[in-house]
Image (tube, rainbow, N blue to C red; front, side, top):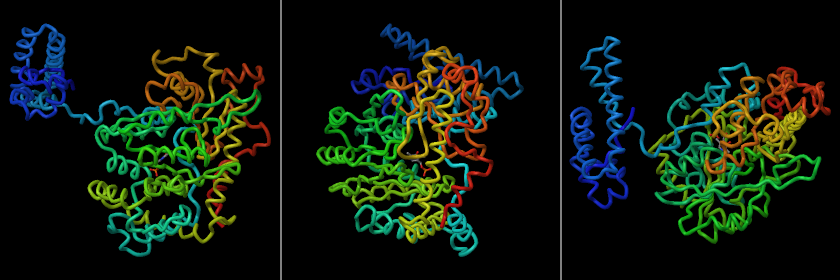
Length: 554
Ligand SMILES: Cc1ncc(COP(=O)(O)O)c(C=O)c1O
């Protein structure tokens, strides 16, 4: 419904604060009696408001535009009203409903963030018969020990059906403290340094709300997990972007996520006296980059120099390949005191639906997260936490050994990655080999050259049009990489799409013979094309093959 916030109240308008931000005065309408009256649904908006508009336009001809908008808005209300009346509703009821809805409903903190790519592409994928390689979750089950732990949590102590401690089920905070204490080289105190949250999403949201204030700047490295920007904005902060840029590879060489780098000078230039936090994501979603020790040291030294908090999203920490090593920035000298380390049981144990996450950090930071947590969700579901506690106990016993899930999972998933790389290459896409995570991005520049005019709005990034085209015509869903960029940079990076390679149930790409008809496959390989099932030594996935990853427990 159209709202009237374009209207300048004559009284407020003569006030210098209102002049600089009339919306502000409108938002706090108690400041102004006329506003309060004018926002009143019936008399205010249909009688007083138009009169005031007329008065304003007489005072200042520039206000005419606003007046026309208001008149158009009122017209829309009335048109809607009479249309509903025709449907047989009583006029009084229609009028009440129409004018009651005229109030602005959406809180201003949601302005500009109400469009979500997951909803849009998820909905579209559900409307077609597709292999969905878009969303980030495995289609194989969690390890047996984790499933059994959940079953035990359901069937054993009935008190696990009740609330537990607000900041985490004690056996879980205890095992997280001892497990990650060793990795981070810290004495972690369960009650002070651990907060259990509703997934890593919950930890991120709590962190932004607790630490980012109005006007604070937050440095975000793009491409970024898409919620960082809206979470910054909802907290009143200002996102400041710094872009990872791919360096060119030698002809014939596969692109690698490691060649996506930050320019140290550019990164340093983003820190100002207003910078409150930097968000780091390693292994990174969507590129699959694992930050090297040298890169982390650079970030760490800038954070220390400028007294900045580091929010480190490490949900894919166990999914690292080819001998690369995940390093937690909190383990670097001087960083524990200013870092929040965020993790996810969903990603760790292939159980994203459990939605158990955590934030680890010094009490000086965590106490503020606890304040947000206790005033928002307060408790997380107890049984899921109990299952995660047991699963970590299992992992602690097997740590570093071949029987550890955290050792077996990346070995299994690397094979899926390699298989997908070959499949994508065979249809003319150019995959960027990820060092970690379960995503890879593929370069679609050749398609962009071959078929520049895919359907869609002219200002819609190419990769987004490409994904829609692929869903409709090829039965394959993925995510356009431009959604992981800030708006000004989207067009520069609109020639990549992201695939999730832990989708093995239907053979992933294996089953998609029709993909051979992708134009670039013809263009690259001739009419015969290169089959999807035979490239390299890739093992053919039979249905149910995914159980391999699920049964990796020792
Ligand atoms: C980088 C990153 N952080 C956090 C999350 C959210 O994790 P969770 O499912 O535990 O909320 C995701 C999920 O895709 C992610 O990719």
